[in-house]
Amino acid sequence: MPTLRLALCQVNPSVGDLTGNADLVRAWSRRAADAGAQLVLFPEMMLTGYPVEDLVFRRSFVAASKAALDRLATDLAADGLGEVPIVVGYLDADGPPQVSGDAEPGRGARNAAALLHRGEVQVSYFKHHLPNYGVFDEDRYFVPGDTLTVVRLGGVDVALTICEDLWQAGGPFAAARQAGVGLVVSINGSPYELNKDDLRLPVVRRRAAEAEATIAYVNMVGGQDELVFEGDSMIVASDGTLLTRAPQFVEHLLVHDVEVPPAADADEVADGVPVAGGLRLIRRTVEGIPPAPSGPAAVGGVIEPVADEAEVWQALVLGLRDYVNKNRFPSVVLGLSGGIDSAVVAAIAVDAIGPDRVVGVSLPSQHSSEHSREDAADLAKRTGLDYRIEPIQPMVDTFLANLSLSGVAVENLQARVRGVILMALSNQEGHLVLTTGNKSELAVGYSTLYGDSVGGFNPIKDVWKTLVWRLAKWRNAEATRLGLTPPIPENSIGKPPSAELSPGQLDSDTLPDYDVLDPILIGYVDGDLGREGLVASGHDAAIVDKVLRMVDTAEYKRRQSAPGTKISMKAFGRDRRLPITNRWREDG
Image 1 (cartoon, helix red, strand yellow):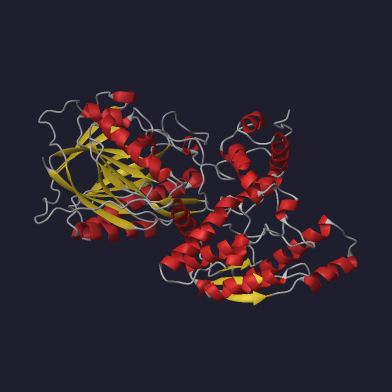
Image 2 (cartoon, helix red, strand yellow; image 1 turned 60 degrees about the vertical axis):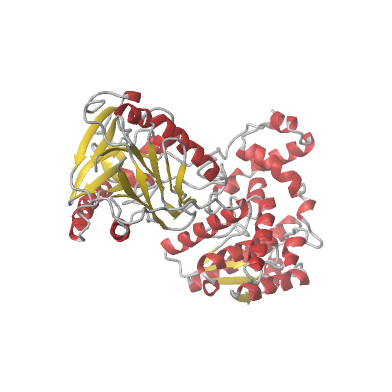
């Protein structure tokens, strides 16, 4: 059988940076060509970044995307890469936006893939299956394609598909089988969530069996607001054999030689004929691709997925790094309480952007224990971050001398003074403020609005408290394994959690133990279980009722919370959208 050398470019584009993203395509195409690639693949919406959200509705942006694609084709030829077929995702449109008064049925913005060759756009493909669940709103933005594009190059037939096309049975992959293709290209912007890598390979195998063809799956890598993309690009043979797999959370060029059945002498299905899923077939031939390289076969290798804690840590580090760098923040600042949450966030920040760009501020009050102050200082010493101490009690006392406050109001005042100090440092020195509340606290509203919730980004927003502890233990163990200093003090990991806003205060005074709380929250928030389902699962009915009341009444706080990296199947924000004003309660 013919051999085709594929290059899967697992790269990190930035939304809206058409010039920068095109430069990435040119640079990585050069690397791929130098490796002898005969077909080069880039991720979904590579030119525009993904997701572009309501930029789709700006006709100027759509026009700029299409112009950038044409310019890229010309530039690639000028770079001496014109003979190499290159597939790149971009934003197209064949009609006005669907939200406009002049919208046309079946026309509009398109999530598209183009094959560039010899300085021109040889053919395009429009995404057929448009996801409209979880973080996806593609029915809001795009019109689905109704064709399957099959390109004949190097004596083999190659079908083009985009992301969700792979996650749905039928449609383009069934059509590809009818068309007799030997290779299906799948370009992706598939966001990370824990254990998604375990789901992805079986799905690719099912589509390979459905298409009776090899699948080349390339996914982007990098952070975009709440989303993070982990890569995990791969090639799977028609019999389900995993031929090669890229690492997660890093840019990577995956080059591999694939045996592909030769194209039939006579097309099994002619151009324009309807095929599976109501799609029409479009066939094109690309002449003059590079010859098969001589010498040893290119073998991309198989990178095995890492443990859950390592995977989540990498996701959180990458998500924060790209949020900071892509938004051009010079540095970050956070409050260091000596507790587990701020310690983990500080360690993530140091791993993401280096200790010289991280400012940790101890903000002690009269209720701050000596061991907490020592633990904050210890973490700063371990990580090398810029450590400062700003006592808050004089400011709190000034407020109390002018306001008659007691109880929870005094506790919240302390948190808000801390928030004011952090925001003042942000304004004065240009830092991005990181908030440090975990998903468990966010779920039940165990935070002070405009206090400890103050911040521009929350690295652990989607991390349950019990997972925070697991991450801390893993990160320290990993440092020990590498012969480095563990960044998180053992005292921060082992001591009972406390906000330290009143004498002897513990989280357990207000909340169930986190080992009890988190399973209820996971069932209710992530699993959409109601009260009866949670009780039937073995949870105490009284505790369930208490927890659900706390979750339901805290929606207004969550709506005002900072963005944070999504790592679960259902993150607060894009994934879970509930009304603030809502009288429905699970107890009836």
